[in-house]
Image (cartoon, rainbow, N blue to C red; front, top):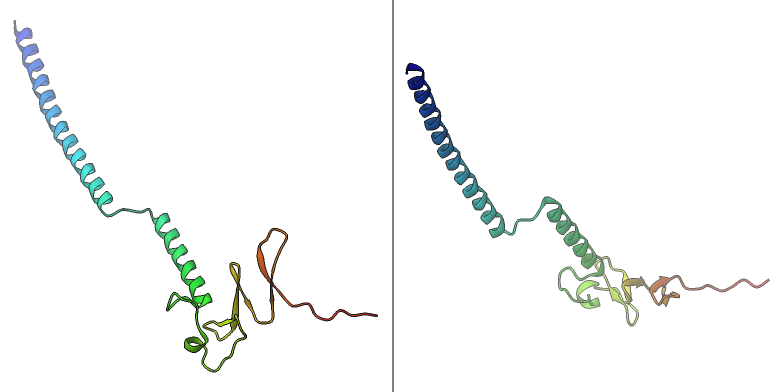
Length: 138
């Protein structure tokens, strides 16, 4: 009889501890789920970007800014004119003066300087070519 009593007490103690343990774990699971949901809401609200995406966006912005600066678009967003960019420099017809004071002409996607010619290659891509000089005849 004593053994049954001890066994029942131990069994009830184990069941009691098991139910307490389950409640504690359930509380932790609810807290974890709430924390995960809170973090997800914060990330979605801020339109979170990975560091790699931020670095790529910064590189592209810098590259675009450099292209605008090199072609004279940086301050106005318009093609530079001789009046507001290059006081005292006279460029030939069709040429504009850039921020360095160099006369440039648009040639497809590139800008040619005065001493070069704008031509197309076999694929129709425009490029700047130095002018052909006189050929030597012997």
